[in-house]
Length: 111
Image 1 (cartoon, rainbow, N blue to C red):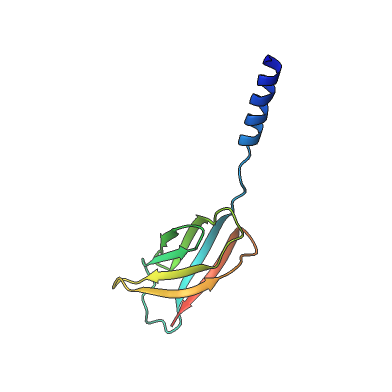
Image 2 (cartoon, rainbow, N blue to C red):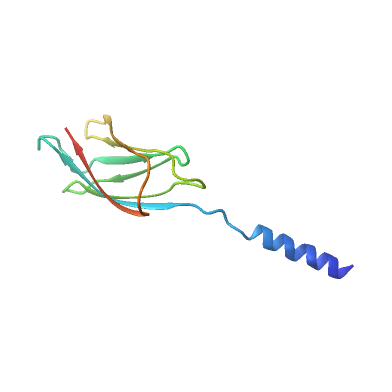
């Protein structure tokens, strides 16, 4: 009887110890103004997906930023990128369906 209980306990521990694979992504990004008239300093960049809420980061004085997020349990669904300017306007930048790596470098140009 104890052998059976021990076997059940070990099987339960074994089955419960597996974690579902998730996809962590880190984006080194650059926000640039095509016309050089739009301020890209210290604005907020947002990445929003269906499998996760959102991740945000502030740009530095050059418009560079670092975003990290976990896309969840599945292949990533399209991720939409926005920026919030200093006037608090939220502007859509781009939608990315797939990444070639979990560490990506991207440059976003705004008009």
